[in-house]
Length: 177
Image (cartoon, rainbow, N blue to C red; front, side, top):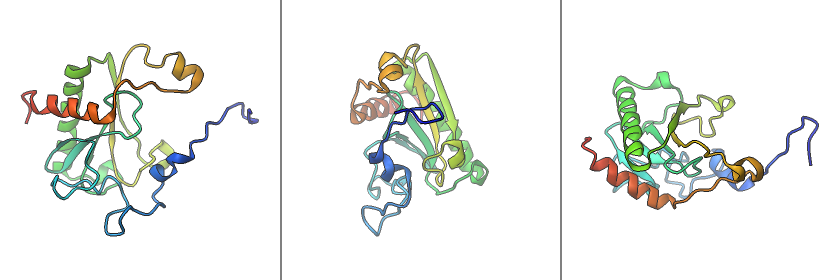
């Protein structure tokens, strides 16, 4: 059914728990923010199965709902909402990890281009806007094929765990710290 504004709606209520902070954490002793459950210490982290690399102040993690294979996010461990809230060390490491992500994904997947960006605030599209995160999305010519355009379905050729293993292995063996 088409609404008066001419747009069709695709309802995805299963994503509500992901995009709202109203849902309780799995364990009341854990932070509600899924990004805050990932720590610099892999032994202390709870939700780290998609972490690609850890730095001192920031880390890279695959997006649980990727637009394309290799879609990851670079973010600080510290729970801050705005880019201007980052300290100098966080800003520098966020930039370094973003550069390393681009280099690693290029070596692994040979994308034709990238979308890199931060959505600051809910109105800008930030679904978890309370914790700053920068998206790195590899793009290929024609990646929005007929399935995406006509059926509203995105085809992903690889499991997230396999993508994570591939990128983490390439990251650590690419001559980068």
